[in-house]
Length: 196
Image (tube, rainbow, N blue to C red; front, side, top):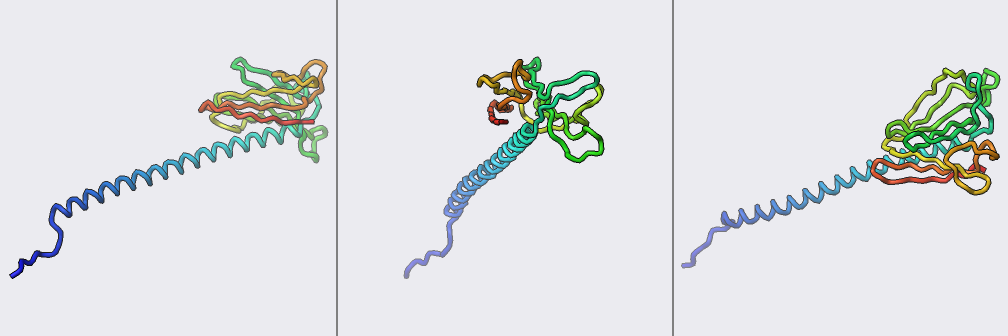
């Protein structure tokens, strides 16, 4: 008579199968978790670059509409382009820009705008009109966050880059502008903009 072995798995075989399943599940979870983390990081990076691109597009649109017209500020006049460097080495810029063609107020077709860095935020400034009282304060709007450096360069007629504008003997509007942003992660982004 043959001995008949019962069909099924032994306890040891089941434990080994469960251990192998646990190892495979752990490896699968780690791989999936890594993919999800990479997707989140790529999405946030894409959003950051999209915001920076929109900021550069905004600056470019404003500077391409620049007018070579001085602005009256109270009893004084400011040059059409007024660029300087603050105590931290960041650029500040005020520009006369074309505005709405049809405005009820005479002489209001145009606007004074500015750009500056306020505590890691690139800010655009809008004055209520091109010619404004000395006490007029600009509206401030955040353009980009996570910016630790904002530097501008202005190309003069001799091909030299300057950090301040206007320059003696130069046109009211520079030939080109170099915009350089330093990001919080240490990266630098630079754009050149030819104006004429």
